[in-house]
Length: 197
Image (cartoon, rainbow, N blue to C red):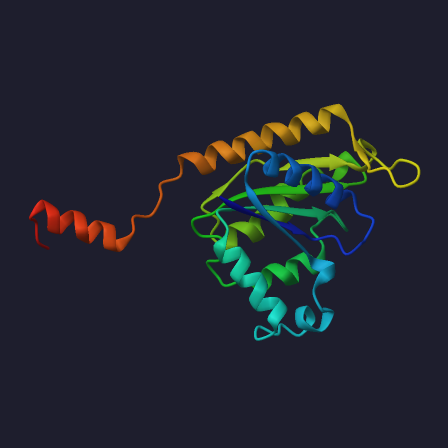
């Protein structure tokens, strides 16, 4: 299975990406193929001018189309997802998340922003026709500690447990999804059964 992680953080030092990296490592440990796309790696002109023909935007569309599920992470700015993430999502086709399971994640300075997942991020993902939207995870900045030197940031125990529970729910949801039947296989079964349509 292929899971795409979208980071809406424009910052190189990002608590959102610390959370996404934790999720990515857990998924890879379960033999899942993952692709991380960061909004800051896209040319600003392509995003701002909605250049659907740019190589970066076409790559985004192709990678998302190939995904079984998405994990979408954003810092909360002004009680909402980042504008850069919204622009990135606007470049996807209208039904881009159809047949996909989506896990929304957000980080913010205080619990006052907790509802940003439900009232800001989920409606945008729903508009892209996500097949199934999982309950989101909101992390308060103080739950993600930057350490001295080159050591990776550390998540507190409670946040790690919530993330791990959400990952299990994501994998369970993906496992029970019906798989599309190859049209050739269906035709072969009908021919071999002696039926005609």
